[in-house]
Amino acid sequence: MHFLTILLMSNGVSQVLQLLAGLSLLVALHEFGHFFFARLFKTRVEKFYLFFDFLFPFSGLLNFALFKKKVGDTEYGIGWFPLGGYVKISGMVDESMDKEQMALPPQPWEYRSKKPYQRLFIMLGGIIMNVLVAVVIYMFNFGIYGDKYLPNANAKYGITVDSVGRSIGLLDGDFITAVDNKPITRFNEIVYNIIFHKDSGTISITRHSKDTLIYIPKGTIANIISARKAGNRDIIQPRIPTIVDSVIPNSIAQKAHLQKGDSIVSVNGKSTVLFIQFDSIKKALFGTPMSICFYRNNVLDSINVVIPKDSLLGFKQFLPELKTEKFNPIQAIGKGFSFTYDQFLSYLAQFKLFGKEVKVSESLGGFGSIAKGYAADFNIQGFFLFTAFLSIMLAFMNLLPIPGLDGGYVIFLLFEMLTGKKVSEKVMEWTTSIGLVILLILMVYANGLDIFRHFHLIK
Image (cartoon, rainbow, N blue to C red; front, side, top):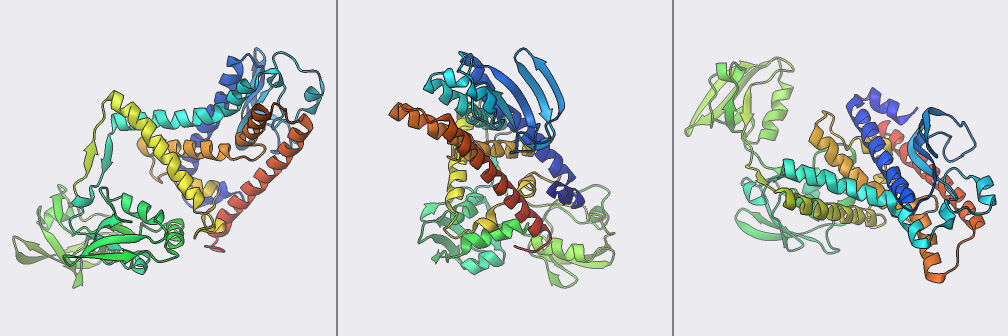
């Protein structure tokens, strides 16, 4: 069963559509990067395709396109096999494996006739474009929305932790001040810094007004990643008390005379001092009588309500105060570049985790895992932010020195530029064929893992 079908069955329609839109945009722009530099150096581009018009990686099988139109020397089209895209550049060993063309004498308009530095730019064009796409998206994001975050100092009630957090030694109500002696300024930095902690990593906390140090136990990284794969919330969250911030007009809460500032402490005798407790108990009692106790001006009071299933009590919860850093257009451009650089380093750091505590089978995923990175409820900002991260991921993956990827061609070109000796076309053909088969096996393996996880056959 195709994994996209499984996602559709799992009410992931919005995520599937976002994945298709995001990847289609990124693939088209990646290929345009190759196309741009090829045309810049007067190299003929025979085909420009979104998706493959053959059964990848077998260029001679099932050759047909859903759409194609020739303009000048280039045929533009949409293939039927949705696993990427390609540009066919004259005189180049690529996915099309056009051996007949390569057997003819080189022509001035062909890739193989160009200078090494020109061929290098043609091969790096897709990666350059992916990086620029991320920069532009982040630039507009910071320019329009700014950078909104929760200052660690504003998490005034400390943290609430799950089982993974408790296994580290953290407790509800702790205040995390540093990881590896690096002070925490933003709350969302905490889990990131724990994942990428040093070998003898430490967490500095304040507990019951006393400062103490926790050593991060071995296996923490794997446990955090496993929890995220299972769709669980992060190992820590801000500890938020159940305090009414405002009451929605004509709601059950208004009719029951709840007011701003009321602090809800129990429902049917069960403690709801924390909002996470209140939310859990409330959902379990839909359609049944609830006795809600709360403090108002230090006086304990109570109300009795019944909340119909899938309805709301009708008040907005107190939340820690977020901070928004604003950027003018010039600052937004600089932030776009610096944030893209930081994200690239972050992805590199994640890649280095393989073999440390993280097994490939536990962290690798296919299209299903990627689709889950998009929000189930579409919003334009979230769509573009995750698409920008995907663009960085594609740039990084294409830099890997694997034949068939841009990085494989770059290695051959660097060898030529350093030694003055050109890699033979026969070697290029064989290594590209092997590389493409390896890529197909990796894709099948990654998507297979997603399918097994869906049916709970593996973690």
